[in-house]
Amino acid sequence: MRTSTINYYEKNANLLINRYESADVSEVQILLLQTFTNKSKLLEIGCGSGRDASFMIRNNYDVIAIDGSQNMIEEAKKIHPELSEKLLHKTLPNDLYFSISFDGIYSIATLMHLSKNDLEKTISRIYDLLNQNGKFLMSVSLFRDDINQNGFDEKGRFFLVLNFDEWIKLCENIGFKILDKKTNKDGLNRDGIEWLTLVAQK
Image (tube, rainbow, N blue to C red; front, side):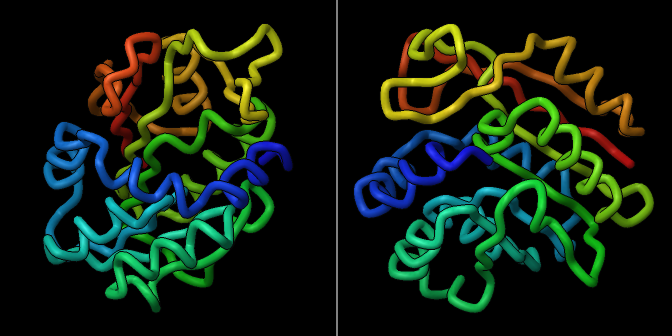
């Protein structure tokens, strides 16, 4: 992930935490419960405030969560102390290695920060980390009106822009079977941002 993107989250972690906690992600959280079998061993990529990891643990899932920002992890531990032993600092794609495999992996609002080359490496690693028939859920921004022609917003964050079919093809090329796909509006009510959520299976 690009340094300028990580730096934004490092510098603004304490401000972003409350914002992420207030976002309406009820649709995605319902889909998480529908996608993964209860008590599954899950990996969350890009945990941010810990909102979704905490939600899944409360619903009887075994979750390990990672984030590329050490400061976000520290802030997440403050508001979700139940995650204190569950959060790891890892950057994509190079640090995405574990000695165990997972029943499911999910990533909400993270993978679009990667270059296409790094995204392909990351999704390939996700595929390898899943148990046979394991599931992968990702939510990424499909359209944004707040970025320039090079994919950067005014805060220095990079966003990869791919269309609906390109996201699907990228996953299928790695070996995933697409089980579900949907677009949804922004959880923070920003008019110029649309999201794509994909559910795939190894």
